[in-house]
Length: 272
Image (tube, rainbow, N blue to C red; front, top):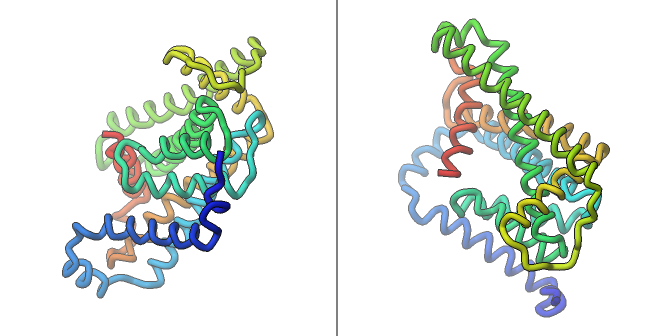
């Protein structure tokens, strides 16, 4: 395998990265209404915009650190190259439908870090799974704290149904993870690192084996979960800070659950 930096040099690599970033910005902006953007910029709060950007940057960085942790213990790789791959996949997610950036992350982990495809798939899946589980728990907490308000807004039956669904998701996540770890620990099968021609069923089994092995590693998993508990509130906080950025007021009539709902529907729409 070859190293791009050795072929074209580090300066040219940086120039290529800058050019790629500018190309992405052009792709995102080419269909934008420039006049409308200029009009909106006049009402933007620079302070809140900087706040939202800083919060988002920290949240995104924590996500990529968690990707690095998800590779442990069997496929631990250098920190910075793995985090850089995470940033690249995050950028790709902004351009590709149906979480296409996750496929990019898997491909880069295989190509650049030599991680088996099944293990890379497991790492990306674990990172997303733990974030989704913590987000569901966060939503459950927000809903529980504002239950009287939501019962008045959408009705008692609907509010309690939502709480039941979120509780079920959280419990299913915990129980499913424990069962998977137990199954893998009982089998104690070493995963063959050599590339093989596998069918889809064998690939799924190998991916689940890697997932169970990684989740069964207490240290990295506990740190991963702890970082997810920091990342999710930061993610919500970023959207929360964007509200006054565009000139809207943060009032009690705009509860944080509304912000969470926007994030949840945005995540679902990316898969449709």
